[in-house]
Length: 133
Image 1 (cartoon, rainbow, N blue to C red):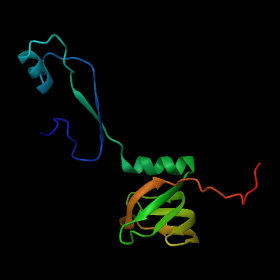
Image 2 (cartoon, rainbow, N blue to C red; image 1 turned 120 degrees about the vertical axis):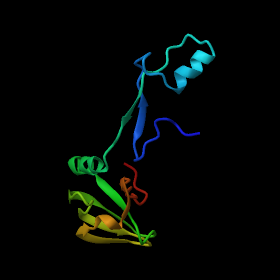
Image 3 (cartoon, rainbow, N blue to C red; image 1 turned 60 degrees about the horizontal axis):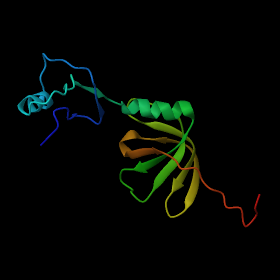
């Protein structure tokens, strides 16, 4: 059984706790059948996070991101976003190719159609060689 608020696009649904007797929903019909005195929620509000806003957030915060590639699943690229467009083409600064080894590749233009996933990069832990601080 599907939810009545099932989104067609990737989004997050939040339930509003306002009540409206003029607009019955599945929940209110169930409560009336069960003779319960609990007020049903008025409506479900859909809040959608636009992908371009996520990319813009990484650009503003100057965070390093890790990009998973579409064709080559064993290779990922990590860098700082310094520009992008509506096609999700990105310019990454201080980019590093991560596969079997790490290879610094500098500033690159990454085409949007080659991107499978974009995530915030984990900070790299530098091993201290046995020195305690």
